Length: 467
Ligand code: FAD
Image 1: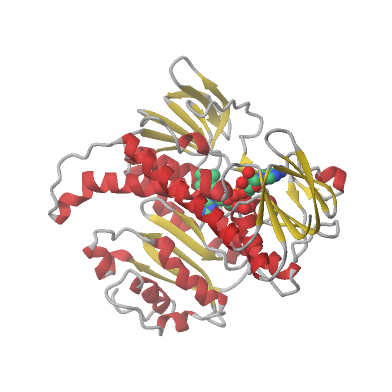
Image 2: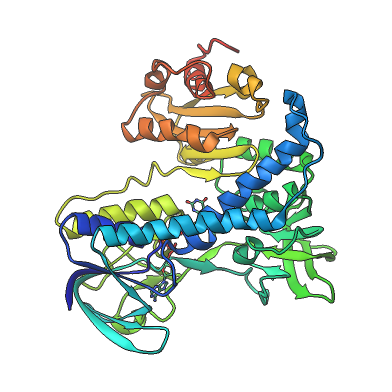
């Protein structure tokens, strides 16, 4: 059997690419070594983490917020089995949905581990060891990423006491104490889940700040909020050992600047120090595919250095985000089909699903200063937004950064309730090259949180009304 396209890996990059290519009339097969489709994102990433984040937010709300609305329900009790069932059911509905979509679009699914024999040939090894070779005109590698451990520290995951994000999504009870290594998005989201459910959470981070790459002012505000919520943060701290003890885990760390080491113990240790591109067993070296620090090197059309081989998603440069992988999947499918697929890397939103949420698109103030770009900033707090006050979610603000000369919006940063939803209008505006004035003159429904986005745009020219 010969194909126009074989996609290796059925995560958000791979399955979206396969479906789009099939829509465009190509004969497509997708190879996946997991039993279910959707990759990291649907199985052990975005979707299960958001199921637990929402459930734990409801738990915390029932305990602390509902009485303020006159809703008296008593002290909430956690049903751990139901909590995990909600997460598992959500994952199942999503991964089954992808299986349905692949079938609906007549994409051939092949279960097993794919390896590239040469351009045009993918060998698939099934679980029982049997092999088949798929002949194809084009190959898209979308094999994603895997957990990375801190450099120079030996970590043995048992996914019960010493956990990666995968284990931390499936704990069989709420740990009394949890140590999170790494104050990036995954560490803070999963730390928030277990803190809301009752764990004492301590975060150990190498850098002197949390959430590297995000706007400094947003991060400062968020750091104070996390500490108020009871999360303990050890910044500028280098982890030197992660060990399993008799009852739980032990983490040893020392100040980055030098000084005395200390060891903390906890029931569970979550190692959340990032992810590495995953290309194990793909045969890339033998196929002559060029790599750079573990990533497959591609040009602006997602082409590797070997003709007929493309790569997208976590396995290539750029932010490791599901929607970035999806958009690259769409673009590469269109390019292979002879169209002009394109991804605008200036406008890729990023969201942290904590309380409050954080969302950003485009440049930070730090980026603009480093690039010597003159800009104006407009800021509006949710304390001055009627809907936010009515919902008791008045923490945070919206910040719009616009080019000082042209008024074109270069970045938008939001910390506040539903920031992840609010950021979408900023992304659309920026995709169209819109200005702060465009946003300020667009009618926003009242009362909505989105009025704070409009007011921040008005504040760029100091003409906000409600502050
Ligand atoms: P993946 O989703 O990793 O999929 C790759 C697939 O390839 C896997 O199914 C794998 O089994 C398969 N595969 C690998 N090698 C082979 C082979 N040789 N043969 C066959 N199959 C193979 N991103 C967001 O945008 N928002 C979030 O809220 C978010 N939350 C996250 C939370 C957690 C806990 C984690 C871990 C990640 C989160 N991410 C989030 C990141 C997101 O999951 C990834 O960016 C995204 O899944 C990358 O998609 P991908 O298609 O490149 O790869």
